[in-house]
Amino acid sequence: MLALADFDAPTRSASGFLIRHILPRTGPPQLIGLLDRKTTFTMLTFGDLIIGMGHGSPDTFTGQNEVVLLEAGKYDPRLVEGKFVKLLSCECGQVLGQDIVDNGATAFQGYTEDFLWVMDYDYILTPWDDPMAKKALLPVVCSMHLILDGKTNREAFNAEIEGFALNAEEEEDELIKSCIEFNRANAVLLGDESAKIRARPKISFPIPPPPLISPLRI
Image (cartoon, rainbow, N blue to C red; front, side):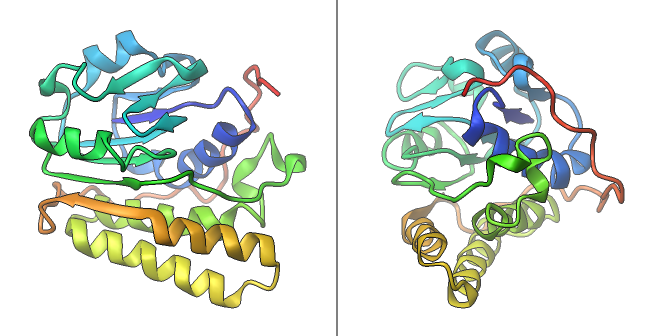
């Protein structure tokens, strides 16, 4: 499952990268934008993987317009049981990640503090083209690709950490560099380090998707 909010500038930016690079390799359900809400999330969470992008807090992950999708201690464990869960969201690695693992998920990857990046608003309709945002977001995309390749929790996580380190080393802009280093320091892996999912086919679209034109909260 993909659960991608896209209602404001940060979620539009990050979800744009996942729409461009990860969506082609995933099957339904793909809950994007207005479909990323509580009812559809709880009804359609099946399979062995949840990739989510939305705002978060230590114990909460939210979807479109910040509707709560997962809150520690307040969801049906069957939503996460047996699944590999990766959340591109602020702070969920503090409490929610362990709660997800305790409720039967095989693996969790997330962040213990805010996930930070610099974005260029000129790319708000085609966020996957943003040259500043990609420095922080492409290592995450790489990790997700490795999960979809059937690599282990640890292998995918290590690749993300290494991607952050390489991008930070090469980055000359001090603000972008500090954001990348912050994300690297706060990335967290929980659950079975050897956990993996059934490998998905390697699929990519040579032509990017059309511009994102759904309503946007500024």
